[in-house]
Amino acid sequence: MSLSSRLKGLVNGNTVALLLLIAFLAIIPLTGHRFYMYIATLIMIMGMFAMGYNVLFGYVGLLSFGHGLFFGAGAYSTALFTLKVYSDPLVGVLITVPVALLTSIIVGVLTLKHGKVYFAILTLALSMIFWSALVKLRWLTGGTDGLVGIPKRGVFVDVSGPIVTYYFILAFFAVIMLGLYILNKSRYGLLLRALGANEDRLPFLGYSTFTLRMVALTISGTASALAGSLYAVFYSVVTPDVAYWTFGAEPLIMTLIGGPSYFLGPLIGALIFVPLTTVVARFAEYWMLLLGIALLAVILFFRGGLLGFLESLSRELKLGVYRRWRF
Amino acid sequence: MEILKVENVTKKFGGFVAVNNVSFTVNRGETVAIIGPNGAGKTTLVNVITKKLEPDEGRVFFDGFEITRLPPHKITKLGLVRTFQVVNLFPTLTVRENMALAGLSAGATGEVRRVIEMLGLEEYTDRVVAKVPLGVQKLVELGTSLLLKPKMLILDEPVAGLGAEDRLNMVKVLSELKKSLNLIIIEHDMDVVFALVDRIIVMDKGRIIADGRPEDIRENKLVKEIYLGGE
Ligand SMILES: Nc1ncnc2c1ncn2[C@@H]1O[C@H](COP(=O)(O)OP(=O)(O)OP(=O)(O)O)[C@@H](O)[C@H]1O
Ligand SMILES: [Mg+2]
Image (cartoon, rainbow over all chains, first blue to last red; front, side, top):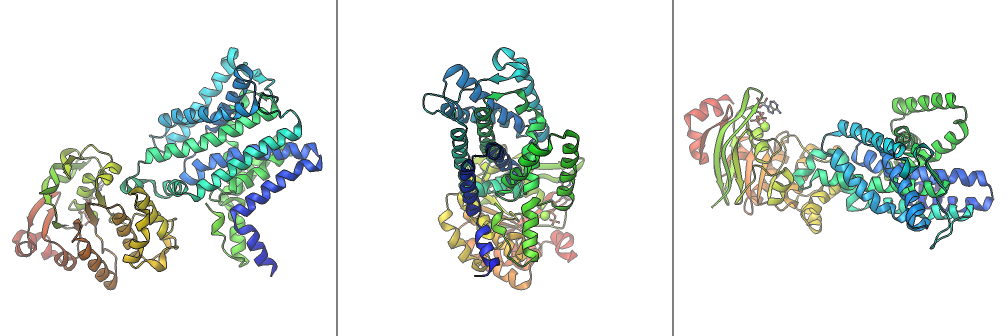
């Protein structure tokens, strides 16, 4: 078997890539290297955030500047629930789901009926309001200090050791990634892609575009909120920063870097973005410069992101056309 | 028994009246053509009936329901389905996926295969719609419409842009279809019109100027002057 056809077999399926990645993440703690575990955890959390974000951005074509709201809602609902109601990380993460559903519906009703440009602005506005509320409602949220001491030890699970925390997050990561993959392959995935491809046609096939957009927003919001929830468990601390609008733009940046038309694009973006932020962000001014140049390069020359670049490269080299990378 | 009733419908664009106080009814089983010169208001009339556009005045009834205030997806669900003058599909999705969307909507996923075969589209099923010939795209649009199980199908220029062979094929398919559902066909090709319909409505400058059997329309002096004479 030639190398190229073997390569093809390996990289062709999104499932294979996803399973390999999960397996790879699963063995990282065996290195005993705390820093690698730290980076890998952030990749999982930010990867989930970006993958959730892209359900709206890549599939449906809706640009949100307010996804910090969902991430923040997840992080704060877990923090508040475990601190004030019931001290268990597992229940604390699961409680995010109904919170996210409710948040998505409220956000959807307020933002989805006014066209794409206004959607971007309205989501931005809502996330700003949410951030202000987190800062101002000190009695509930701890203001700018946030909430500290989010418990890792609970009634059902005890994730107080770093390795257990890691696998706890990996388990959620795996479930959500596979869930998104199944969604992508299902009829709902097809409907969401149709929404992105030619939204105006759908009513004439008997579909309410508002309902479909709402479904997309809810899936996207829930995945993002779960990412925020795990973030809260991981750090044991949440501050309003997680709902700040610049943080809400990070999944967009990751998605653009990886490739928004590819199922795994946002995750690949996180794989690049997270280590870079962790290492380079210490030199703040260079970080902004680097990020600016990277974004410029992506938009001007590599519109399909890294995966788009690889797809055209593989076409050049006659390795076959990997349309199946796309969702 | 009437299935579609259009009552005093008017549509303006700014000061320009594109559809001017149009009324007509279509009975069950009738196959109707709407003809008229470019800019007569045919497409606009269909857009208003199917709520692609809001009418300024008038009312529309379909199958016993008033649909004037209904959103387009509910009108579609009632069984009033349309195609578009400029092919309107999901260009980045495959032929099969386009069909599946319609099948899903009407709970007819099981029939996608049958419709693909009936239209002779087997060799294109897994091709992206943007990359198949226009004749195939037009058939795909017809196929998606059929999967929606319409009671009435409005076709806006089904053969426009097609070559002779594709035209013949489309006429053949449509003459089968008209046996089982109400067709309204907007068309410039008079051979196609005369081959298919029982009745012709002629529009000009937003108004209906004639309405009758094809033989009568062919002889109608006004129509000859305004429309047929111009060709
Ligand atoms: N959205 C719009 N805004 C402004 N004017 C419009 C719009 N749609 C149509 N018109 C105008 O309304 C008139 C009727 O257009 P319409 O498309 O209904 O004609 P038609 O009978 O379908 O013509 P054709 O045979 O060329 O398709 C034309 O003068 C057209 O320019
Ligand atoms: Mg027209």
